[in-house]
Structures are given as structure tokens and as C-alpha cells.
Amino acid sequence: MITSRYYGQFGGAFLPEILVATFNELVTAFNEAKNDPTFWQEYENIMSSYSCRPTPLTFAQNLTSHFGGARIYIKREDLNHTGAHKANNVMGQGLLVKRMGKTRVIAETGAGQHGVATATMAAKFGFKCTVYMGEVDVKRQRPNVFWMERLGAEVIPVKDGTRILKDAINEAFRDWVTNMDDTHYVLGTACGPHPFPEMVSYFQSIIGKEARKQIMEIEGRLPQRIYACVGGGSNALGIFSGFFDDPVELIGAEAGGKGLDTGRHASRLACKDGSPGVAQGYKTYFLQNSDGQMKETHSVAAGLDYVGVSPILAHLRDKGRVRFTAATDKEVLDALTLTIKKEGLIPALESAHAFAQAFKEASKMSKDDIILINQSGRGDKDIFTIADAFADPQWQAFIKNKAKEYGA
Ligand SMILES: *Cc1c(COP(=O)(O)O)cnc(C)c1O
Image (cartoon, rainbow, N blue to C red; front, side, top):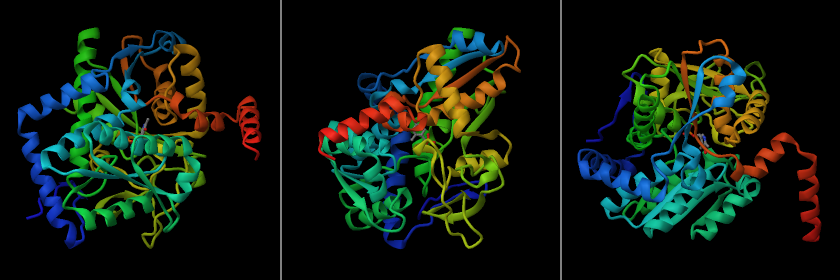
């Protein structure tokens, strides 16, 4: 009875038969939780006591003056525990795992941020935790591996394929097939087979619910536009969903990498390089060649560097409800520099894509207009990545000295 779900032509649950029973169990547990008003209450309680919710809406006075157009507000998902909106999803799934009576969680991770968030949740709830990570990423992301291990997770380097995120996802599914009795797979974004796109967006919808209430309290009216960066699509769907029924324009900013005409980007919806296909259990726009082989993607922001995108966003794009654009690596670093200097805020490189797009448009809007930018995470925890992106010479000297101390 797999209760699959489609968004237009996208979504579905393309599963090996052996996983069908596990998915049915998950769909049932999720539907029961959703219909139980005490579940959302329990979720809000833990998010406020453990992860600083509700996160504030900050008026960016200096950026507003700088561009001389729309009034710019920033939704502060960076203030969540572990530094990003990912906490909303993992804590929600953690509560569901408790309801299902399971005792072990597994996760895939690319840059390691979802792995750290899942390991944190597992420590808090007392679950065993295994994180699959491509061997290439394990080498690149030592700080996050360090924290996952301190948090008690077992990090397994995946040596298959190109040894990056998509290979880690395949390995996590393999684990789940063998251990489905006691194990839940905590998928990190609004992608994958049903019910993950719906379930992850459901937990992230807390962002949009708060943001709508907050802007109405502060300004007494709705914003004209909302900007969010789009990797898998979970932070974007989270904030957008609070405004689906309102006359508000929603803008998703993808990774433009070196430029959309270079082929070195991760833009599946903003340009014509993406095409519909089925992979990793769901149908969406993928960056693939004519044989359906996944292409290599590029972005300065590891969290946006993925070949697929939420089927919900693919449908909203085709319906014309969400406008998609892309910001290049260079535009992103400029937007990040300006935001740090003008506001003292340090967005993650991922979030800076939304800032870059908003900055392109703010000055052309009226002083009466309001825009909202979702700051999905904070950048200071990613100092290794950001300092690399800026090619800061003093930082490079510091790393060389450190290496010398260790006798390298
Ligand atoms: C992981 C991550 C993203 C990308 O994921 P979505 O599912 O598209 O939200 C964006 N921003 C930050 C800070 C992240 O850590």
C-alpha cells in the first residue's frame, strides 16, 4: 500500500521492494504524528529550549541605506544550535524516531554539516549513530568529522564511485536495508523518496510560520519578496511555505558556480542544464547527461553542491510560483564581504547566495517595499572553507605554521 506522493510530475517513491515495508512504517508514523496536535507542541518546545527558537527577524538598517531601495529583513536561522536550519529537520525526525521506538539513526553527509546536526540530535536523544561520508569529503572536512566523533557517532568513509555525497547516500540506503528493524535514516534535505520531501518541509515550515507572524508584528504588512538559497531545497521550502497563499514573490537562489555558461555550477532550475529524471528514489530535475549519468557540480558552497533538487520546488518552478536565479561564486563572496562589514552578520556561503540575489534587486525596488532574506546558517563555524574561498594570505601562513608544528 505504499502511499506515494507526487507534486505535478515530480516526487514519487522509486524503491527496491525490500525497503517498501520500512517506508510504509515511516509514512504511517509521520501521518499519525502530523495529526496529533501534541506532537507539534512537543517539537516547538524542544526547539525553543534546545535550539533558540523562535529565531529573530533582524532589520538590516545599514544594508537598507546602502542600497537605498527596499527595507531588508533577515530571518536568523544561523542562531539555531549547530549553526543552521538543519537543526529543525534533525530534531523533528529525532522525535519521530522516539515515537517509532527505534534506537539507531544513520545519515549521509557531504560537507559534514548534516552529519554534525544528526550526531548532535543522537547524543541528545541517546541513539546510536552512524554517518556515511564520501572518502574525499572525510579528507576535506576534518573539523566536522572531529565533532561527529566527539559526539559519539561512527563516521564511515565511503570508498565507492566518486567518493562524495551521492555515494554516501547510496551506502546509507544499503545500511538501512540491512538494519531497518531498529534504524531510521535521517535524510538531510527535502529530496529523496516520499515521505522525505514532505516530512523535511513540514519540520522546516517552522521558519515560515514564525517569519510571517514576525513581519506582521513589526511592519503590519507582508513583504514583497522573499529570498532563500537552494541546495536540496529545505530552508527555501521552510520559509516559502509560510507565504504560499499570500501575494508574495518567492525567489530561490541556486549555485551559479563559475557561471551558468561554463557548465561548472549546480543550477538545476534557473537554467536549461537540468532535465527531468529518476534517481536516488525520486523524480526531479537533475544535472545529468543524455544517458542519465549524473554530472559533476561545482559551487563555493558545499551545501548547494548537489545534482538533484526537491521535487516540490521542481513543481513550484514549473507552476511559476517560485522564481529561480543563480548567484556566481564571485557574487557570493562580494555579498558576504558587504554583509559582514555593514551588519556584523556572518552568513554561511550557502546563505550568501540569497543575499547576493537580493542585493541585485533591492536598489531597484521602492523604499516602501519590504524584502526578507533567509540566513540559513552562520559562516564563522566554516572558517576553513570561507578563508580558503577568500584566499586570505595571513590565513594560509597560519595553516603552514600549524603544519610545521606537527612536523609536516
Ligand atoms: C545544508 C545547507 C544548505 C542547503 O540545504 P537546503 O536543503 O537547500 O536548505 C543551505 N544553507 C546552509 C547553511 C546549509 O548548511
